[in-house]
Image (tube, rainbow over all chains, first blue to last red; front, top):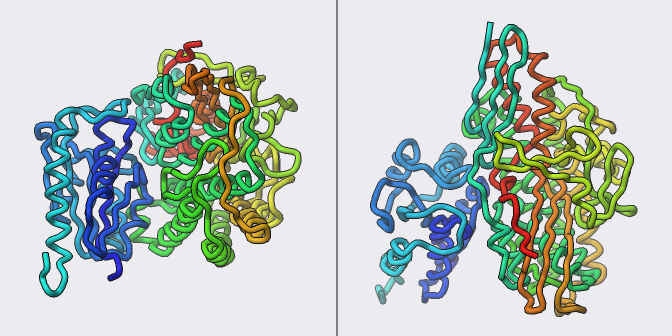
Length: 161
Length: 428
């Protein structure tokens, strides 16, 4: 089967919790994945993100997002919700941010059919290469949830999963 | 009559910087470019780490200059430990470096500079009004990103580059496919030159000192000597004689000066210092843009980037031909000839000359590190340009002045988040 789902971890591992997307991508890559799923750890791709969105049915992004929640809280945001928060509440941690890259992709008609953002509330964005305890504790349930989503949406025709 | 312009966090430059200009009674009272980014402690992060990790750590300083930092870091460690990389390694590094120069320049001229000239606020409205322009930029960016990934094993942050060589090697079929794509990209390069040659570049002249690397046999990006347009060459180990870093109250970045009050680094400095070594097609691009050294219009730093886009595509074809002719052979990285030492690596990365200076102890851990980034070498020069520019534009409405000043800042392509580093970290 051709790859259909791309999971992208975003963020700078040298800025503490900003690196949570990179960490999540590495953890996912160590797991058993359904056919058709590819994991990319893109660090801080800036506009480059736009080029990675093309050609996939579904793209799942994982990034630190300031949502005003308790540190370590994560939310699963779908296409419309991402745009909603991008315009207002979410201050992206990269320049240009996730919101700008997704907006550009949408303007050019390059967004995949399905796009999901797992946003995790960071506790600490400053130079340093360790995740905060709150975000570190959020990783295992987050990974488990994403794996559940990946296996569910890519089930084989005979429904073996 | 007085005017004050405060542009907080200039949009469309990497990181954050503030322009503060105050004019009262037609006199320039204040003119500065503040850097307010939180200091970044990358040098501190290197301390106590094995030298083998340094390139991976420093490549995370920036998503735009990841290969540039990694290559400079590797050269610093190699010089410290007496390692001479193989000819194949040198060629592969050049190829990925060209990929990064292309990637960065394409982003800068299309996503950050073009919206100013085409009268739209940012690249997102540009994508509505001129989708073909943005799609071309993304196509070219994809090629340059893939070029890096084929050589370094990963997009954005290289993983296969190591001290003494590589841990991953491109396959023949990948290089053949890359060569075809590079040839096909000439049409996009020509369209890029045509577009930027047609734009109304602002008039501005101020002669300054231009500093870049230089090499006897090629347009220098990796290694060589430091060259000043005022006529002096120094070994890269003498970088401190050139950079003379000093602190100013309004910035958390350090300023630099050499033989004048300030100097400029980046594409325009390389163009002015090493024009003769550009590929003939790149010289033709320069002619189309009306550029011949010495160019003293700072805005044309972006023009020099267009010239270098042409050069790097053509030179990448030549490098791929050499690699295909010789064949890429998997080889072990060259081993150190000594256990400890001190070394300076230097590359001319997209935004200008970059230095990494490392001290490595007997246990292979880094005991001291100094990194001098292009953008902080440019800030004093940017302020000097603004002091000349403001009296020329002070009759304009504030909005017009603001745009001119922002365009001037963007011409430097500053990456401010990278330019800030703490003052004293060498623990030796």
